[in-house]
Length: 441
Image 1: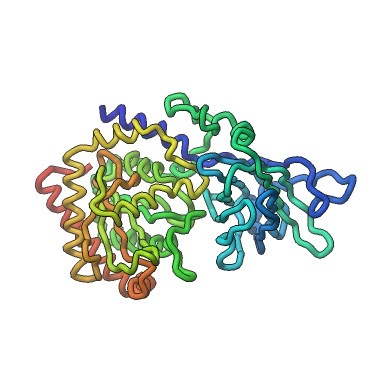
Image 2: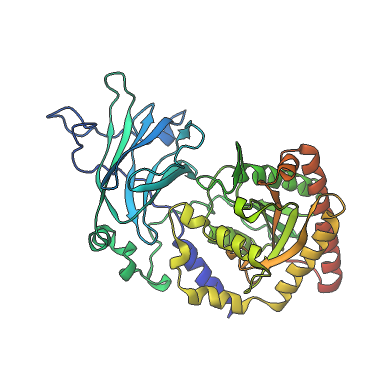
């Protein structure tokens, strides 16, 4: 049964990889932003990812109303792109080569016309993505790249038009239509590049040291929570790298990072990395933010997986974290529920026991060095913790929405203390586990 569960996980993960970048030129542009009369649409240049410097996006803006809305991205050179709509929720995804986004703070947060908001960022090495949250069904009426002219830089332009649901569904690629969604067993992964896990080193079969997977949450297009210019994705990456360095310095363990730079990694790929590497422990690092209407909260919290959330806050957080893939434009909630049910049902009693044991050890160590939440041990249905054979915890190291916590999160001194307490908990966990259960995997 465990082999069957692994087979289902690997098949499911194949659906998560990003689409290959391709030229997405559409019909002729409107006169307001289009090429001069009689001129063909401009040809795209070679992929910018091969250039010494990445293209720079210096400005982005929306114009129009709730019938027609235009998006304009100012660039320093022409790029290739591919644009496509997605259903439930209504979104438009634009895949482009890796771009250095130098946009003003808050760009994309304001609604205009058919667009509720848009976000942007790295989604894989060499590839960036822009995701638009739409107010309803739309079609991409025009999409093109303009040459620099009349003092204006090269520009990527997209025109959205309101359509009805039927027209929208018919405009989708067959595999993306809600009523034609293939099951995991029917899906093919032959043309999907293994973007996120191909570079992982093979398991060192001659190295008996336990392998620990550190998972900095979010990344790339997914900023996570944010306070001012501090983003969760950067805070937890810095923490994760510091934790990796401290663990490796001890020489007792091998360490694999799910991401070591600002790259988006789908949730199931994070789990797949842990399982494919036969990890002995999976530690996911996050930093929460409480909505203003819900008051204030502070301190670190340690989560384990559970079918039922321990409280409303845990349920809210799990729901938010489980939407990470939809944020990057790929909605993984379409995955058949029976797959998740099988994984949950097959979760070994021993694995859950070890996860809970490590969570308690971690709490005991951290409470002596860092501030903890008033309820520091919680559980909820985090998808990233659902590997049935890898003890896993998710650590919210603090709240970026709390002034005191944020001061700690950006402090190297605080980070050093928190990392030290985690390493001590890891040492205690493995010393007890090896003493009672024999050699680790």
